[in-house]
Length: 309
Length: 309
Image (cartoon, rainbow over all chains, first blue to last red; front, side, top):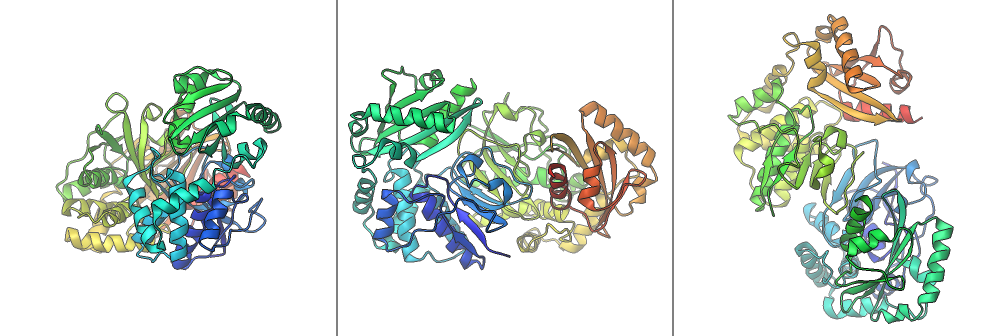
């Protein structure tokens, strides 16, 4: 078998980059050659994680078909979140924890999805199922990915499997996960030093809902006013992005990771499905999202349902 | 959690029915309530299997949403192969060994696919991963499903995992798998006693390829002349079915399970992709398919590629 590339989604978060590295190691231990790559530069949190564990971030690719015939996807499956030429390569493996949509293959493949908080939790289970050892550095990276995706096991996406994986990986990596986790999350919430244009693109995914192109971005902070004191700047940046990329609707989740609450900034059309999905009214383009921290579990499903209603 | 239904594809073969029973038992051992049902009556081979192991065949359903809110799919994922009202229920689990197409969800789910010869092989692995015991009767049923899907481990879809599962399940079930397997396969090739209309519908699946509706059916036999001596009757039945169901193209694979060869009977339009896919020419609506026994691995991928070329 010739080499394959393995990568997470565009605008990568910590799990998207870490899961590619871990899955490549898992397959290497099974005798296969997968090179982990990324579809974008690491964010501040991911940089903190790689510095902390002395690991190297993977190189960034724009296309895959110029290098390989086949690829593995981690932490995503929807084509619009993947490499630009995904249609020109064969997908042999997917490991993911999201819904399945806009994804199809001609051939049978290895597809492993579970409704858990993080792809790295599933990869931890894969190491166990095949009785392979988790290297110490990769344990530290996967620990960080699970803390990132579950907001230190507080997100409603968190399952017993995520908790078990965090405890086991912390032991292998030699970390106090609670103390390390808080430090890591804080490192990822550096809002003041960045432009609105950069922040709305740092953790953003595109969806097709009811025939409309919907962009859902998330900014984590310890105070939502860090964003809303600059609301005009954010609105200008979002309008420019909607126009440039053809998004009908932009939903920016501004999430207080300490309180586990969000407030939404909503720009575009139609906004009625947003009000329906979250049983509220827009005021000054904003809507309260109490208790909402998970795009995947608390925003995309009700919004999809509201668009299709 | 309220009860869910679990079922295999329409026109069920042995694996479609057995995998539903096995997955329901697996989930029951984990404390969940899944009722195995079927989307059609068992074929002759499946009846032989259930008689042999003294098992009861599941009831047949036409719709799911009138009974449950959520379902699990085994041995298929494509909507057109599933229950008629699949769009009205939530899919929580899929265990399958086919390509993924025409399948999407709003929510994260448990999806387990591997490119192995049989869904029952994957369920055998699941029992092991969760350290659960495989009941003797279910071991016999899953053994039969793997023998059926892999034509006694001779199909090119067969993997080392299928071989290992067959040996282990045969031990649990107390069967000589080679002797039992030949007897079982022979029981499923009863061509002379059936109408062409029944035979072309007994193991058939629908696909969308290049915007066309393509039906691919398979008849197993120990002599392809069992079918072609009645070619006129088959052509009439296929033309009637194409018209009634709106299929553009019907591909009937007539497979000699002893020689591991097939011959195709092709009715409809366009036929050029068939000639491209199998590098041959149609004569008298027939095309030689030497070495071809697997619809999933040897017919659907090249035909899909030819339609999309």
